Length: 357
Image (cartoon, rainbow, N blue to C red; front, side):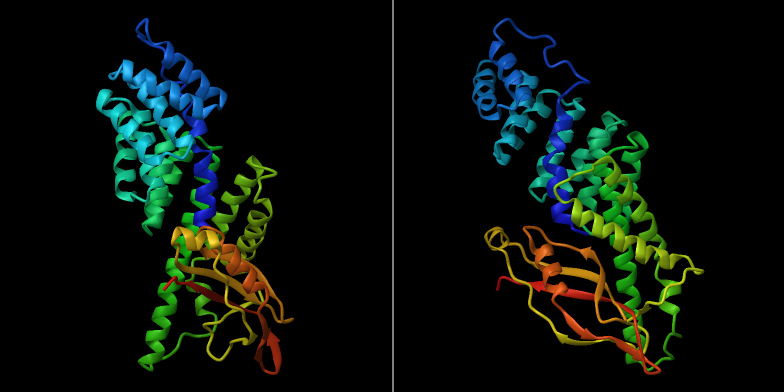
């Protein structure tokens, strides 16, 4: 889904969970640990730059103080020093190998740096030490999803929600995993239909796509997203998620065979809208600078009244590229598909390619 935006927003607030309440940061402190105490207090007050400087002094004086290294890592992350934060967490783990939050923090840094295998490895170490560590289930699931392992990602989201039913990040991960599973199944179905057409095998009967595509996945995704929105009213991207929820409800209703759904699939033989005008989605400067490229995939309803409805993000990109694809989609003009001289609503996919070269 909008993997990038959801992951970025949710992961940015992730470390609010690391105000370490399950372990005393002041246990077994030496008398000269004043810098550590001040550094931790500065971190908790949100003065991250000062916390970094103070905790650097602390670890110089007490190089084997795992607590000071841990909070130095948290503070470095907050000021955007990801590499140095990773080194601080590595030191934390080396000094205290049974400290689950250290592995969780390290996993997060690896996720942030796109080291998905490392993120899964350390998140699983954290869970082995603390089976109730729902944050690590979330990190492992997010890493799996970025590796296109949607089923594994969904399982991790479910594990996190078993521990904390109102965990917003896990609800979004569950939503995205279900949508990705649906998109993967739909893609396989489209490919099988293309192969059947090329081999001139008997085509699927009209309506077969509706029976075979697992729209029930989208129905469950809508329930998960709705739960997230109830937990997080007034989010900065509330409008986006509300539109996605509306689209999920629409497509999810196709799982009910008794639903009165007049929209057909673009895979239905001889039933396609005619595109009259389509703009190329524009690169954002932020995406260029970050070197982001790839494909945004949207599922839309080409309604019989000639209007595009229910834009659902099946695959997104970061740095504003998903938004650019949606904006370009809204500008599409088309003539509806026709059957027996009457316009018909048709569901289809749109792809927007972003390539820097």
